[in-house]
Length: 159
Image (cartoon, rainbow, N blue to C red):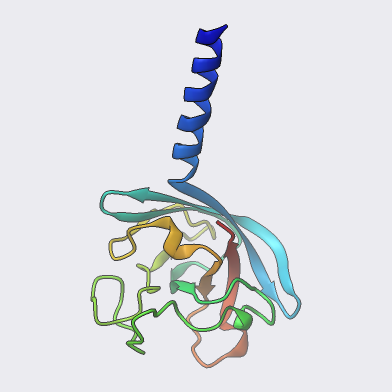
């Protein structure tokens, strides 16, 4: 009986440790009231080299899209309620994912294939811990800056 209890304890602790190193974020098209149609998910994994974002998305316009982490945990009003890019150091600059003088929330571009799917992983080398993303939002832009509806897809990172 003690062996069984020991096994269950180790299993539970291991499961919690693994779960703490990754999160799945459902991604929806944006609407005025928040979530539209589900278009897939992004699996985020904590690695020794930063956070790895593995999208499994469909129904997007082919090409490169801005892919960012935003301050607030909301997709309302076409994603505008998500606020600005994650910028804990108040740089107020879009300098991409590799420059430490810009927004921390700037991720590498998201590549969408000609069939509207996005399956290529990107690494965010400046974001090292999943806890930095808790209660934030993942935003996919249509790359039409200044347009209220440029935030075409959104997913809240709950934990």
